[in-house]
Image (cartoon, rainbow, N blue to C red; front, side):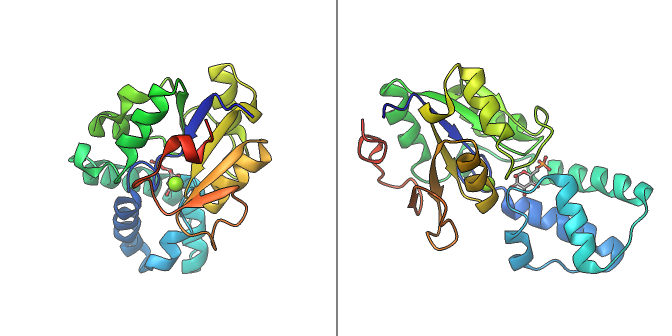
Length: 215
Ligand code: G6P
Ligand code: MG
């Protein structure tokens, strides 16, 4: 099989924004007296903003009005934008730039497949944006991972079949989305957590793209 494109999730794969999401959700939790734990934050990885709030409210056992919810979604995002305002290239995860160099040189197309509506801001601030041929983010999809929409749009936007694409994902829902879309899935993180992935690597440090992708 000759793969033609690499589709990357953003948070937890290229940069670590989970710490900022965690901080912003924790800050929001003070409005309804709830202290989000780190373990719960793990479960919010790859989950859209609206769905994240719904889960947190369920954990807090708080039934919010629609008005409260929409105000809080705005407040959370304003706080998050504030927290990421100083992001810079030093926050690109180790090994990522080297890996991008290798696949670009090998002729692969590169796309983003992220649930985040702030993906472009993050890619710009870190300088990663220049590597991408196509960006599919939370503004361009209607269904969240594990639905494959975000990756299917990436594949078709680049003009390739799903089977010609490799997805890099750190979240279980993201790996599921890739497999549901009939793509090769490489998990980033813990193999126990990402059982559905075709292969799992802990991170990009020292990864030889030619070995991993067999070109
Ligand atoms: C990523 C993160 C999630 C976040 C989602 C939406 O998938 O892993 O934690 O909730 O993006 O991000 P946004 O920037 O649109 O609030
Ligand atoms: Mg992720």
